[in-house]
Image (cartoon, rainbow, N blue to C red; front, side, top):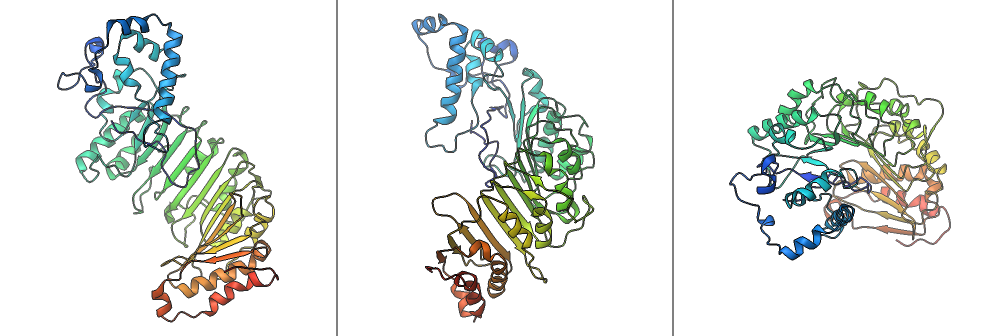
Length: 465
């Protein structure tokens, strides 16, 4: 069975590896004989090919003489080997096929089921998994729900498949006390059923990801996934309005990753409202806030002015923002992150001037973003990102403006860099990637590009272009 990764969002920093057990679409158990009393029979009544190895009596007798503790350590080692040393597979796969071992003999099965914590046993539910019919056959192990947006082995365009998945998802959600990870692509059939999600706590839930393939105004039911979530470490919401967001943030004080991606206008939360929850998130490492459009209606939050005082986020390393400069200023005015490593800011095109004063003050309060010596300007088809880096160090800051006109992007970037002069004045090397030839042929005014260089030439320092 193919391995599945529990976390594959590209902008997420490395997280501790979690292991899961893939339940087959044809039935949970995949063996016969010794496990027959538990229903361990394949649909065709044949043994899995992986279990047809012939073991000699002497080999079996030698293993039988080993104490249970040694066999358990062998299983732990086998788990590590299967994760970290698969041929041609990086990053490490996050599934360990421990179900094969429980089919060897009753003793091995008892050793494994007696050590669920040390072996990190989990039940893995994904597209096509018959959760509704087979989940009760297993011991009460932690549950991982993985229903992402795309798969090479599953037909998402089939309405029957979507309905079947929705039924199985709802069956798994009835065991809220055992679920440790949830990743759901919220389809139309699933949205209709989420109104019946039990309003129970999720004490074991560590990761919650709710996403839509496209933004079409979907709103989750008011009482869906309200928590509390006392052990939640990862929260990712993409292209769907989440009315219970404020209640989730209120209980999720141990968040490590908070990603709100392409928030629709009907799911808008003001940065000021978000700031009311950040002071207690002392473990937060990655903050990603991406608004869908420059015009947002404050539905989930009701004010823009930042609260007094600042949230000191010592663990914060990655910060990404898509939106208008007003919202960025409000958010950064209430945050101190002295150890920030990566800053990625994308401004929407706006009629008013870009206010980056709070960005400058935020950077001046850090210990990592005031020593950039290299700048790189990449002129793409519809994007001109400026990247500032430090030689020999991982620290980076990227700035961009979303606009279709090349000369307007250059003009906006020149305006932003002029306000950030204290940060760019020590730049020693300036690289420019090729400007698209079509833009040059269209007669783009070169004056914005010359204006872009001005902040780098005011300090009489050598510069390589």
